Image (cartoon, rainbow, N blue to C red; front, side, top):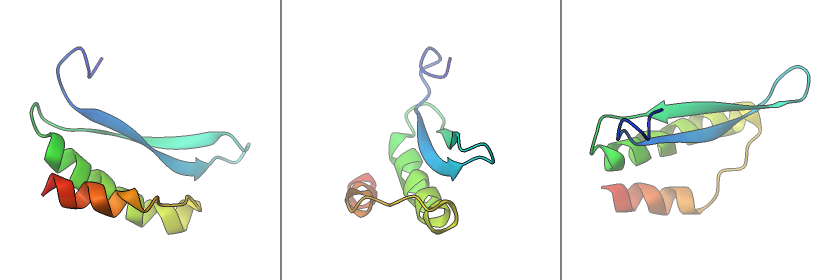
Length: 68
C-alpha cells in the first residue's frame, strides 16, 4: 500500500514473539523523505538491537552517513 502511494517504507527485525515467530517494525516516511527515513531506521535499529537481540550490520552506520 505504501509503495503504491509513493511513500518510502522499510521493515526492521524486532526480535521474536512469545511463540518464537519473528517480529518486525515498519517505518513509513513522507514522500521524498528517503534520507530521513534511513536516518531514523538506523536509530531505531540501534535502540532495538540490544533489546531484541538482533545483530546490527556494520553497514548501518555507513547508510546513516550517506543519508546525511
